[in-house]
Amino acid sequence: MAPFSRLAGAPAGLLAAITGMAAAHLIAGLTDPDASPVLAVGSQVIDLTPTPVKEWAVAEFGTADKPILIGSVLVATLLLAALAGIVARRSLAAGAALIVLLTGLAGYTAAARPGAGAGVLIPSAVALVVGVGVLSWLTPSGSRAGTGPADPARTGVRRRSLLLAGALGVALAATGEWVARARTRISDVVLPAASKKAPPLPEGLEETYDGISAFRTPNDDFYRIDTRLTLPIVDLDDWRLTIDGDVGQEVELSFDDLLAMPLVERDITMTCVSNEVGGEYVGAARWLGVPLTTLLAMAGVRRVGDTGADQILSTDVDGFTISTPLEVALDGREPLVAVGMNGAPLPREHGFPVRLVTPGLYGFVGSTKWLRRLTLTSYDAEQAYWTERDWATDAPIKVSSRIDTPQAFAEVQAGQVVVGGVAWAQQRGIDSVELRVDGGPWQRCELGPDAGVDYWRQWYFLLDAEPGSRTLAVRATTSDGDVQTPARATPFPAGSSGVQEIVVTVS
Ligand SMILES: Nc1nc2c(c(=O)[nH]1)N[C@H]1C(S)=C(S)[C@@H](COP(=O)(O)O)O[C@H]1N2
Ligand SMILES: [Mo]
Image (cartoon, rainbow, N blue to C red; front, side, top):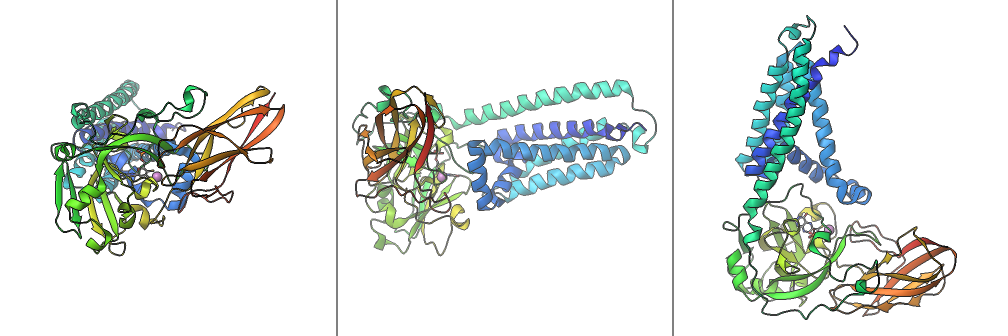
C-alpha cells in the first residue's frame, strides 16, 4: 500500500459533509436559520462557554469571535467527516455511523436551544440523509474489502464533484440568506413621525476635526454585540409584544398597534459592558419608540408598589432573556420600546422589529433586541441569560472617555496636533474632559455640542506637539463631579474602568 492510500476515503467523507451541510443550511434558511447544524452547534458552544473564556474571546477577537467560532466548528466537523470517509473504505456501516453521530449531535443541540420546536430537527435529518447517501455513493464497493487499486477515472469524478459541491454549498447558503431577508419585509415598514420630536442634532466636531467619531453613529457603523450567529426572521404579521407576569392586566400589541401610539424621539448613546477603556463598543443614535412607562401603565404598573415584581424580564423572539431593574425603568429616565434608529426601521442586526433601549444601563441589562415579551417578575423567581453567568444585575454605565485621533502609535508632525474623541456618562452628562501629556498636569479640553445627558460629548484639544515620543491620556468628569477613575477594572462583571493612554511619535 502507498503511504497515503489509507487516506483515499477522506475526500468522499468531506464531500458527504459539505453537501449534507449545504442542503441543511438551505432548508434552515427557508424554515429556521438557527436550526442549521453548524450554527446550532456553534450557538450551543457560545452558551456553554464559561464567562471568562467568552470575555477573553470578545477581547481577543472582537466581533470576529463569531466567524472564528463557526470556522472552528466547521473544521472539527470536516475532520470527523474525513475520518468517516476513511473508515467507510473498510466498513461503510462504520463510516455512516460517524455521520449519524455528527448529525445527531447537531440535531440534539438545535432542539436544546431555547424556544426550539420539532421543526428544528429537519435540517439535521436532511444532512443525515444527504451525507450518508453521498458517502455510500462515493465509497467504491471494491475498496470496502480493502482490495484492488483506486479507479483513477473515479478519483477524477470525485475531485470535480468536490468542487461542484463547494460551489453549490455557497450558492445554497446565499439563497437561504436572501430568502430570510425577503421574509422580514423591513422595506415595507413606514415609520410615522414622532409626536414628541427631539431637537435637531447640532453639527458635530467631526465636520471640523478629522478623525473624531461622528456625533451620530450611522447604522452601518454601529457596534453589534449579541449571542446570535444568525439574525432572526420575524414575520411582522405574527409578531406580538406581550406584557405579562405580575401585572394588573396582560397587554398584547401588534407592530401596527405600537406604530399607532404616540412615538417619542430620543438621542441615546448605548454602551456594551464588554467595552474596554478606549474600546469600540459604544455608539450614539436617535431612537424612535414608545416610552416603556406608557406600556407598563397599560398593564397597570405605574410605580414600583403596583406590583410585587422587582425586575422586568424581557425575552426575545427566540427565548433569550435580559433583566432590567423595575426601579430603574420607572425612575424617570424613560426607556424606549424602539421601532426606529436614525430615521429608519431598526436594522435586523440591531433588533428589528422592536427593541428596548434603556439610557444609562449597559446593553446587556436594558437593551433587548428582537423583543417579544416583557414579564414583571422577581430576581428570586427568574434569572436572565447574563445573570446566570454571574454578570452584574444592576449595571449603570461608568463615565468614560476615548481618544479617537491621533491613533495609538501614530506618527504626527511637530506643531499643532488635534487630539480629540468622545466621552460619555449617560444619565449624568459630561462636565469636562481633560488631556494629560507625558504625565504632566491635566489640561481642560474644548467640548463639542450638547445633546442631553444620555448622549456622548465630543471633545478636542489643540496640542502644540514637540518632537519625540508623547504619551497622551484622557479623562472625563460627570456633571455631578465624578472624575473618571484611573483604577482599572475588567469588563466582567460590571463594566471596565481606568484611563486610556496612548503613545504617539511626533517628528
Ligand atoms: N436579544 C438580544 N438582545 C441583546 C443582546 C443579545 O445577545 N440578544 N445583547 C445585548 C448587549 S450585550 C448589547 S451591548 C446590546 C448591543 O446592541 P447593538 O448590537 O444594537 O449595538 O444589545 C443587547 N441586546
Ligand atoms: Mo453588551
